View 1 (cartoon, rainbow, N blue to C red):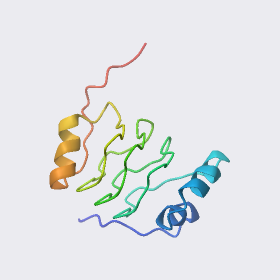
View 2: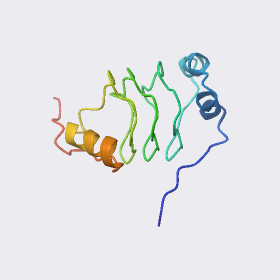
View 3: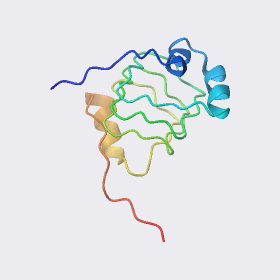
Length: 120
């Protein structure tokens, strides 16, 4: 079964599609929930996005401008970043640099390393 990226009717998703990053961040700060599993972010400019706590599993970021975004508090398993602009972006420790490079260059889905050290 092939998972195709979706264009959601979610109002928060539409803000991102329309390039209203500041408005999105403001509404998110006010408590709006963001679940963008398998959503299509192809070729968008998402610079300045507060990605903390967002579920991007399976999302499609082909040719997307992700420069400077901190994804360390986001869920990215299964997302793809083929051809995206990622300079200055942070990725979760559970995603190895090799996985990021494979996704960036070949469009593979990001996989978690399973090597995350448990704190405590």
